[in-house]
Image (cartoon, rainbow, N blue to C red; front, top):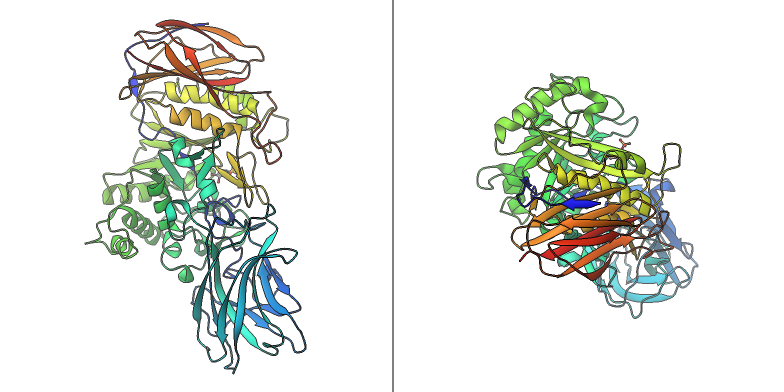
Length: 631
Ligand SMILES: O=S(=O)(O)O[C@H]1C[C@H](O)[C@@H](O)[C@@H]1CO
């Protein structure tokens, strides 16, 4: 195959071309990138006096343990407390433990910050020590500290301890425990609320992110942070978790930005639409800090009056929801000297606005196109008037139905077979250039054939198919302004969707082959697209050539979906230095990175020789990035 490259760029690479789609699903937030280690830490949204209310908690040495509806709750947002009753006649440590999110990593290099609130429901003469510990499921103690609990404390008192493990067990089958001396505390009843256990966080931010997920080790053992995938945007808060209202629930249980900001004790949490309770500890401001810390811009969605269980708000009751969206946007970009919600942002520590260009109106409203005709008109109409500098993204199919005002951006989602992505590498080539821009907000090869089962993890075959499609996104990035694989993160212990880009468990992270494809494309996107000989439609060999005009480099991405290697000749329009690099991701088509084969397939970089016209053989089943210095 001979590829002739044109020296004049057809278009610049859009600023936000590659990014990440995020929503609270698959325990990607709670139990994932949000660093809180204790599951069910505040008994949010559970029914008191039930055993299910105690999920993730366990009793130690026969203590009585019950979630109560506290007559004096720690806050109106957290009505439940954990009530501990110490029986008479017991001896030794007695109390309770939390098993974390399917495990707790104990690392002797870390200082853990633990805290909880306690009170005595009835005053008591008790004054004794509670031991806070990190211990194995078998009871081996790795770290402990003690606090004194005082029986006269009948109002809530918050206690903090630091925990420094003496060693690092391999296993994550560990517990966070609170115990008292059974003889000393016999007959006592003590209430607890709002527990928390934090490890060190990404960039040290309070209430922040799990470092080893925000930082994904690369194949050289270094640490390539997610943001060095160079993801330029972060889509939040969903996805279905924005719009779906779990069966039998009302509008009031939708995700609401204002219920997720402010002190953690004031956040009620909600039943997310992926079957588990969201603490909303990773709240709206935390999302903005995540973007800031990883140098990404939010592509932020607002709820637009539709719930996936099929209901749409009628057109005469939208005003309070439009106002809530206006307030949500002002929280991000408003002037804190004039706007109340921008002032709230300032009071929480961020007086400056966050960057924001794109706001998505709903999610996948092709499920409710009819009502979207008026919902879009009212939401986009009012929000455009309030924020003329922002760009609003519609979520129905492009131009179906016709919407007013005419959307300038649409969000396309596609979950398809690997074959579909190969066949559709030219998907956007035929789109009319009429001033409309496209966000490929969610895409992934989810199976290898239409009748086949879904993939658990991406495979080389599925990731290569995505790469072929992505060469088309680059060729058409004059109208494709952003693209993100979805979903981003998955806790291997509890997930509701596969495949996903990066899997993890309580102590390790497993970047998939598709993660490396995203990283290769995003970190080597260039600043302008150089047209070249077009690949064969529905063939097995695809490429994309870009130039980084600041670094003065040429970047050539090559995708070979064939089972045999493919010799190629590139004719460049300029001289290049002879010493360049090839980074190759390749392997057997069925190979995956997974917890059992964590680094089966990683990109390998090696030097190659370039010239104005040079030959390169694309390995079978490979994605390659060639980089050369233009001279
Ligand atoms: O069942 S789907 O509609 O395909 O769900 C998909 C689309 C939705 O935006 C996202 O939340 C989910 C996958 O992450």
